[in-house]
Amino acid sequence: MFKKLMLLKIVLLLPMLAWHASAQQDNATVLESEKGFFRLSYESQLDPIVINQMHSWTLHIDNANGMDVTDAEISVGGGMPQHNHGLATAPSIMAIGNGNYHLQGLRFHMMGHWELELNIASGGVEDKVVVILDL
Ligand SMILES: [Cu+2]
Image (cartoon, rainbow, N blue to C red; front, side, top):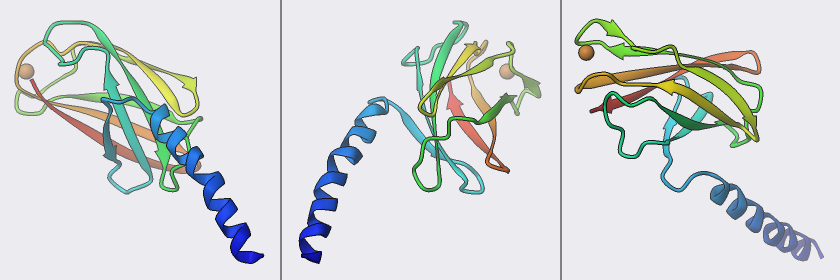
């Protein structure tokens, strides 16, 4: 009887896992935060990303247990460290549900090495993801 229940649980769980995986974007890039509290996946509206074009990204944030983080406070920063300048724009972030966030107003204004910093706070912890882009 116990075995049967276990099997049933696994069978029930499988479609949920598959659904969760397919709910994330196909072309998304997945990155772990520096301290391991969050997993960020992002998909750019512009693919490939080209310079000088305003565009948005869709982010998805999971915690270390793979649960959607729906209440994250995210701040965006970064720039080109080798040129000593920041972003050309002031992007904004809005939660759109199910652990997804709309990152709006990105524009990379020159070719080269960019680092986009996302500081994520939720559940009493703060962590950072640095997205490296070589444009
Ligand atoms: Cu530059």
